[in-house]
Length: 415
View 1 (cartoon, one colour):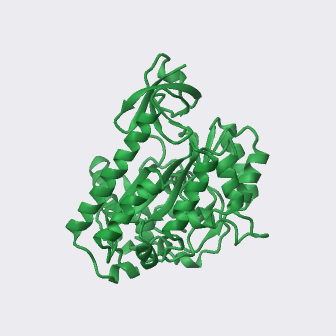
View 2 (cartoon, helix red, strand yellow):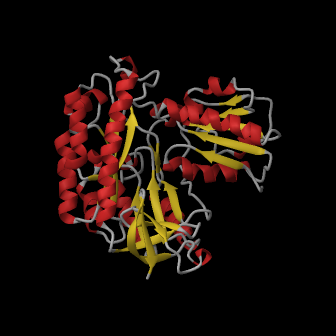
View 3 (tube, helix red, strand yellow):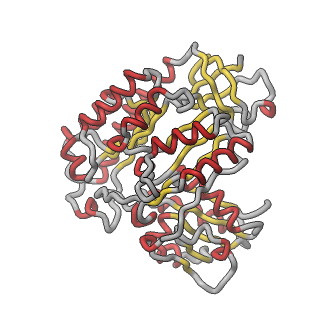
């Protein structure tokens, strides 16, 4: 094994930051870094499991824990005997943090982070490049602990983003995904207050050889006319959006302190579909939020149809200490789990119908480095029935005739 081993949990931003950790840590074969997530209790539990498994697998390695869970609750990880060091989110990109020392924790005040934000990018080990353009969040949704792990919203200057995109294309990566904690809040902290739409326009203009540009999760209420125009009419923008909708009932949305209504979410997607019918809709939805009645829950179920959601990410509500939602009247865990399963089952059925609708079509697919799977423009996962050796397909873009559905992915053969 060459260099540090990084185990990422959570969002696409963590995937990109995993590359920055590898660069910062250098060629340290004796080091394992757990890049944790704090969005749910389950995410923290998985990080602890990974720490214990890593210690058994490589007992001579130093284990360092970083990421949002480490930033928010460092003491719990510091107390684990398997852990050598806990590093905060502000410290995890600094090479000095990985030099062996006597400290057990290097976790600063994330809200005091003033350093200019530089983009981090998933490197040549991926067919697609994840590029950070924004970090932190200025909003305070009542269920969310992430602002306390990421700090205030900060944006990467457009010139640095463009340089990172050019570097990805020069490496042969044909698709770039722009990532952030609150992606659509990009820009107000930069000179001239550019928007995400303005950044996308500049990327497309200055990197003409970039074939695919995709955006990670967005807040629907912050999609302005400029960005809407790009999503609905620019061929190099992929026909796929993932929205942070969270719920389908207006009262629950208010109690979550979300800034959109159900009607606004539905109207946005109707407008997108009218302009670009092939666009696929993904969304995050929480089941079992405090005070959620059966009627309120049914509104979330109906939202799957009303917003044509085919890529649903369903989360059972998980109370996070220190958030307002944790102090609200809670539902029974069994009811939360049951509602999450109902939502997930409905979302899976819609996805299955969507996949079946593409059988017989031809999809343009970017093949991952395994040479066996890839993603269509609409983000459907495709498995290849090989007529060509897998080694010849890695990182290529090719048209695939879709012949069937295999579980949660399409199956097809190259033309």
